[in-house]
Image (cartoon, rainbow, N blue to C red; front, top):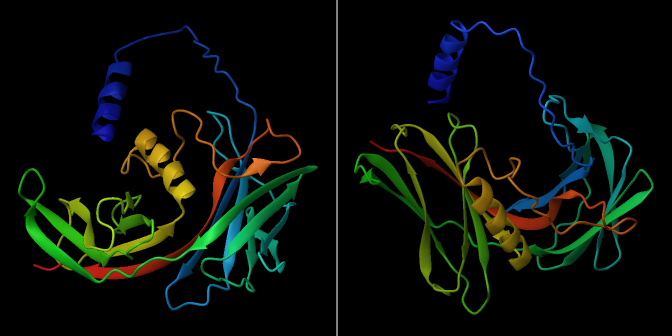
Length: 272
């Protein structure tokens, strides 16, 4: 649809002669740091290799992303062990020695341009995806492929889940979040419906453990941009603040979030 509207718009322009230059003045927001600090541990993996990306917000007409390459980045676990993240390229800081311990507390610290940014979170475990069921007459039209990814919730614990469904012909994954208030301890499913799925397509289904505060953050974010409207990390229509604070200058807060999530991956091949 977008391409169609662009063609129509260009066609209209070809019949219009306009010599006036219209200058649009946009309010420039204060430049802020963007800290993408998602520490992920795939089930069965040690989780030693981790990365954090640091960039800056950009103006409306700016195409290039400003990367931050001179920050001091560390994560400290609750035993006092410090993991240093060293800059690699394009604002990405890496370590190959991270110690991923589920249900342990961690503290992020970023020092850049004489300001210190910090956040604290717990490493959240997740249940595995048990099975995937397919239905070819799903959706409102009855002609869409419907996938249900089943998992069993851990009873007696407040659990929060983030599910992503990704296929290579779609730019961004479909994102869903859940809390277990109404299905504690039961088997439940995450639902994915896509009319363009064909037999043989691979769907990458991933489940992430979430803390309650990360769930609340994603709930607000997804309500603003939609689960399929350009990805959950697109620019939202209004400010959505994460859990990272600026200890030096609280008013100069960053964007982004510090979370630690165990994740389970299920690769499903679409059937006839």
